Image 1 (cartoon, rainbow, N blue to C red):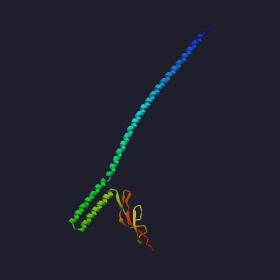
Image 2: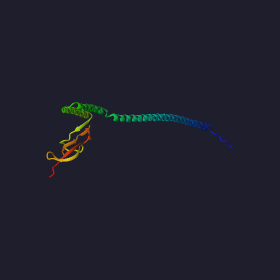
Image 3: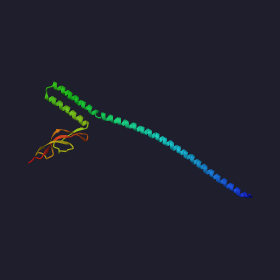
Image 4: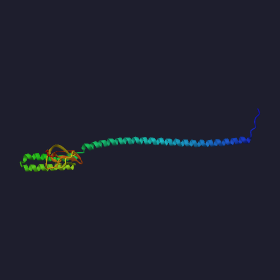
Length: 192
């Protein structure tokens, strides 16, 4: 078989273009390798950041659990001892009652006993008011189920129907809440 003669210029051009193409491919390959290295670094940074955030989240959850436990204990303690001041102030009234009982056997004057009882009652009323427990007036006021509990009705031509005539037990508020309704007798119209 005869050997073809090739043009040396063509071979040189083909070799040059191949070298250029290889050079371009090498350049693209290096750029891609650099991109891969950068992406791997980014992945590693994101992984590290994720680990740090997970650890921080775990610490925060533990701190929050501790906070909930502490506040629950504190709330229980506060509720348990919330009335301590009130209890202490009642003890002073009890001391006055004990002194009064002791003095009953020592004195025979009714007026002295009456004055002592009035003083103790005044002190007791003051203790209640200081602690937000306030009696409210009911007599000659319109009957209101939010404040009163009617025990019975009584005919009256002196006042309109539905007016509180008498009070068996005084009603009390604790701040703005009714803690005991007044037990009352309410007027009704006379039957014909």
